[in-house]
Length: 367
Image (cartoon, rainbow, N blue to C red; front, side):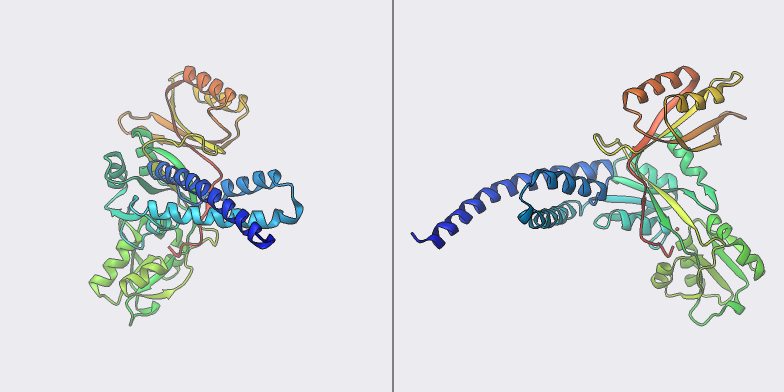
């Protein structure tokens, strides 16, 4: 056997070993896909990929081959993601509204392989996950201009679903009308209250009458169906394409920094995932200084609060619940001490979610 044949035999042997290792790795990838589907997690995890590459680069000590190995590893992870995408094709993702709504846009950015199902309102989308019809829901929790989405906060407080991720979608609002309309033709503008609020200065400047709709995409659909040249909608560019409308004016939101934060809601929290932030919701005992004591307990244990919001408890007049987002890991030893401390000071206390770094999605020309 000549030297070339000997070398080829070594490659054949290595390829047989690689085939077995590849099967083992892809079996694990399938298990991960199933877990992500169950817990409402996307396939792509940038932080995890960076961690894998950095860790494996330390294990490879041949400088001449190292760059080739890292290229091989990157390609392998790409194949793994393709396999997971295929396995998650049947994932059902609920959102509020119709196709073209900003929630639909966000859901497609987060779960590009899922089946995206629109519901009439936030509660219907929430209940679809609760009742096992869908695997997860993508719902808005806050807009940088219009503020907190109270109805979603109330669902988080009253229900059992948990937040497995927070994603920020840049939002651009547009004035949409019939193909033969112009801005000078418009008398009334229809949209979701948040969208109208985001564009209030523009709408007042043009002295448009405003009409409330449940959703920006529904508003665009209504404009198309009614066929009135004097009626326009505030909605996304994607929505204009869907319903055959024309963009009469671009970028009409008052603030250029217009973002909506979307939460992914699922039945259970993922274990072993990155825990950069956590969410607590609680009510405090009816004694003087109770809220201050609760807030101080969080900071005393070394957790930095990034948000503190209050909402009325619907069933109890003049009573409020509180929503806290904080940095850190609530399951750490110090986190467990904090929870124990808070339990003594709060009438009710629940961990609503934990997740890694907040991810900014690609721009949504749309809610």
